[in-house]
Length: 143
Ligand SMILES: [Zn+2]
Image (cartoon, rainbow, N blue to C red):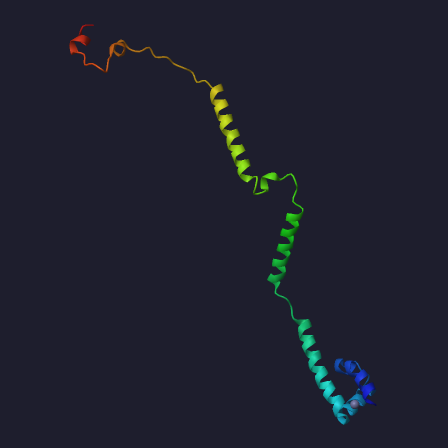
């Protein structure tokens, strides 16, 4: 086996998928050829690192955060155009409008509702009562 044939089979040799016959030939060549043995050593290190990187799993919270950000972006993109109240510019206007409508409705309902009015006839003592002057007690005794 020459060097190029050996190097062609290194991948299968590392994976262990070579036939027994070829494996023995590659083993013999690697034992005899220092350049191919060195190449195989480097190549196997690279292959191990690549396998470790492939088997590394990502953080599950990372996927959750990315999905929530994507949903947020989609929600912003496809927000209905008629939801004017949700825009920050129109929020104060909406609040003022609602408060104005509520006050107007309260005034209107207050004017429509008239409670039962009971009129008390003022007593005769109150008719003659004058806070600005002090009446003599004889004034009340006269009646
Ligand atoms: Zn060789």
